[in-house]
Image (cartoon, rainbow, N blue to C red):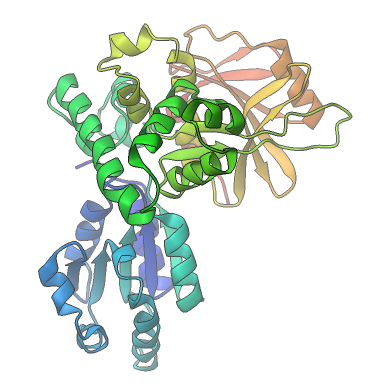
Length: 394
């Protein structure tokens, strides 16, 4: 099993911060494996319930009585979005446990759709719950497990894909994953949304990886209205399959791009949507640079402290920063991504950094040595920069 960095954070929050935690992430990202690992070593014992299993659903026919009877155990409820009516019951159970002196370690809730779950749980469990996003395996986690960076980039970070016996098995798993989402999750979360249209949109977004979101153009290609495309992308973003990276606006006296960029979040899913089954196929495809950029951005965003927000920056004259990390209202780090062992930094990157007065300037490339390049920028490997961000004070 690959050790996941989020495990220590989850244990800390459940044991000493709040009574309940919601672990959010796409299907097959490893939420259940992590939850079972936490449950197996929980000091007061634990019980695991999967809301996709009829037998476990029947245990909750009288949910209030059953959940109260489990004290002081940690109760893990998987696929919690299938039973939203539980949230109101959980509030009373948590408050009673607190009154009896058990302050922490009540519930661990797992779900796939972040927006719905956060809305439902925040209404009922305000002040009682913490939220954690679980992403696919990233660069530092793969490196610690002895997995080559190119294997992670090509196959993506979903554990079953990453650890498959060979490239063909990994590719076939990803195709099944895509089909499962379209056949199971889309009808569940958006029953009126045609899965075939969403499949075409998902593939289009893979072709446009890292490009500016042009809803009108996508709508024309799909034969739907622009607001409809927006709703489709909202769903993919809510399922944590797509990221809209927002532009950073600043008063710099220049015309700025104000349209978000859009990325399919897992590089392995990008490659599967485009029919690229192995590393050679990826390296020979026009998406190679944009795919690597998205791969790097996901790792760095995931490693950043919670008080840092990700953006990009682009002016109409071509000055651009691939990833701008902002703390409060202050840009603190600018990152350029180059799929080259000898990264050449553009003049536009330096001008953009000067516009925003950013001192920390990095060029992430597929190597491990750190060295100076032009425009006051340091070339650095992905794992080193991700570890640097993970260790930064929040």
